[in-house]
Image 1 (cartoon, one colour):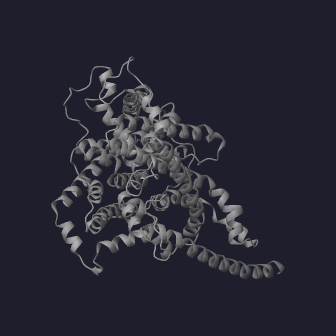
Image 2 (cartoon, one colour):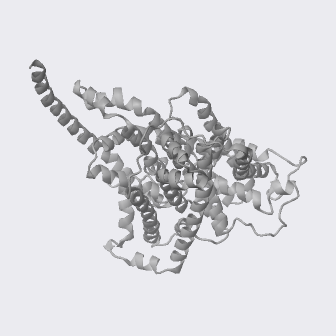
Length: 579
C-alpha cells in the first residue's frame, strides 16, 4: 500500500515536471526562432518583395520582362542540363566508391576515404582552374612533356559537357558521404540471410542492398543536384569564356551591367532558380516519405564482402580514379604556378617561385584574404554550433507543425544558389531602417550570409544525434527534478557534442574557401580567398591565381590531415569522413 501511495504521488509530480519542461522548451524555441528567422527567412522574403514591386507599386512587370526573354529560358535549360548531367556523373563516381569501400575488403580504406573527400573541400573555382591548366594548349604540365594540344586548339572544358564533368567530380563526395553512412548501418544478419538463401553478386546488390540504402542514395543525389544547380565557381570560369550562360552566371552578368531595373529582374531570376532548387528538395522529401526505410536488427561490424582475385584490380581502379581527378589536376596547377608567364613551357631552367613571393610578400590582399576567410569560417562554425544544439533538441523532442516548418525552411538558404542568397542579403541589409546603417560591403553581411547558408549543415548532424539518444536518460533526470537547462548541460549536450563538432568542422572547411555567396558581397579590403582567386584569374593573372590556389589546397589538406591524425584521440563522429 505504501508503494501504491508513493506511485500515486509520483505520477502527478512527473506530469507537473513534464508540463514545466514543455513550457521551457516552447520558450526556448521562440527565442531561437528570432535569429533563425532573421538570417534564413527574412532575406528570402525581402527578395520576393523586390520582384513584385515596381516603383513602390505591386506589379508583375519584372516577371513579364524576364520570363518573356529567350535568354532566361536558354540559361534555365543550360542549368538543368549541366546540373543533371553533373549529378549523374557524381552518382556514378561517388556511388561506386561508396559501395566498394564500405562493403568490400579493399585495403587502405581510411586513405581512400580521406583522398576522396579532398575534392569536396577544394573550392570549385580552384577545381576549374586546375583542370583548365591541365587540358588547354597552354598547359605548363603537358608542354613540359611535349604532349600539349597545338596552339590555337579549343579548350575542351569550355563547353556544357566540360562544366558537367567538373560539377560531377566536385560533388561526387556528397553522394559518397551520404551513401556510405547508410551502407555502414546495414545489419549483417539480413545480408547474410539473403546470401544463404542464394542471393549473390548483382542480385544481392539490386534486391537487398540497394533498397536498404536508397535513403542515402536519394539524399546524396538531391544534394548533389541542388549544389550543382547553384555552383558559381565552375560555371563562371568555364561558361563565361565560352559564352555559355547558366542562371547563376546570368544573374552575375546582369548585376555587373547595372541599370535601373536590374535588381527587380535579378530578383525574378533568383526566384526562378530558387523554385527549381526547392522542387528538387521537395521531391527528395516526397521520395523518402513514401515508404518506411528503417533497418531492423542490430547494426554491428560493417560488411566485408570478399573480392577474391579481383581485389588488386579493383584497388588499382580506385586509386587510378583518385589520381586522375585529384593528383593530376593539382600537378598542373603547381606547374602553372612555377612558370615565369602563362603559356611558357616549364623546364629546369626557367621554373621560378616568383609568383609565390609576389602573393605572399608583395600583395597585401593575400594575407588579408586568408585572415578574412579564417575569421568568417571560424566565427560561423562556432555561432552555428551554439544555436543548433538547443534548436535541434527542441525540434527533435517537441515535434509540432512549427518545428516541421522550421525544419523545411532552414533548408531553403542552402538549397538556393549562393548568388540568390547574396542578392537577398544585399536587398535586406543594404540599409537597416531602425539602425540607419548599411552592412553592404562589410564582413558583417558575408558573416550573416554564411550563417544562413551553412545552418542546415550544422543542424542536421545534431538532430540525427538527438534522435538516436534514448529518451529514458532525460526522463530519469527530469524525474529527479533536473530542469531543462541542467538536462541540456549535463546529459544531452555532452552526448551530442561529437556530432556538433562534425557539423562545425564541415562548416569551417566549406566556408573557408567559399566563393558563390561572397562573390557579390565583398568589397575592397574584405576579400575572401575564393574571391581573390577568381578576380586574379579573371584579370589575366593566371600564374598568381594558380600560386594562391596551390597555397589554399595545401592549407586544406594540412587541416584535414591534422584532424585525421587527431581522430584517434577524439570522440567517434567528430571527423565527418570517418563516421
